[in-house]
Length: 162
Image 1 (cartoon, rainbow, N blue to C red):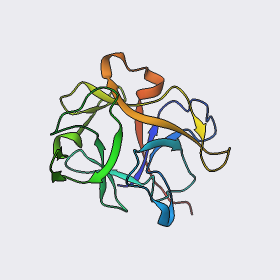
Image 2: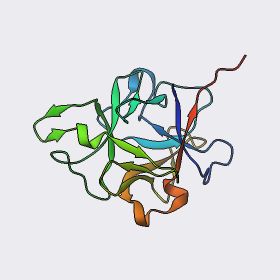
Image 3: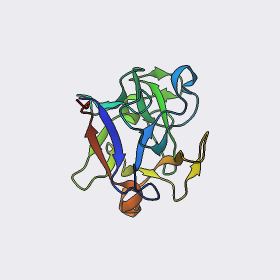
């Protein structure tokens, strides 16, 4: 099932809220930059279309990339960015497997498995290529101290209209 990974609180975007997003669009997708929370777009664009796969990875299905907490040798620290990387990448200094497995908790938190770190967005937003589009930084923070409005998520399956 494909859909949006959406922040439960709409924050400063009452009309559309924030969704997990790959920076860029179309031919200008930027896999060299961290993922963001961007205002949710109408419909389902490839840069926001995710599936939660059987391995508990957040996969951007159009690109075959997975949300990956930036870390070294499979370990991450609070404040680490979330980046798009090849699913299960294993290269020098990057063992992505433990940095791509998430637990989707009943309270809406998404925890990097066994780390005590949860997906969180920043306190502030800014505009992107035009002022009507907003983004927030995306990173991991200690689940125990994460602000609920900035760290509770829901998966919203995409259902095309008639």
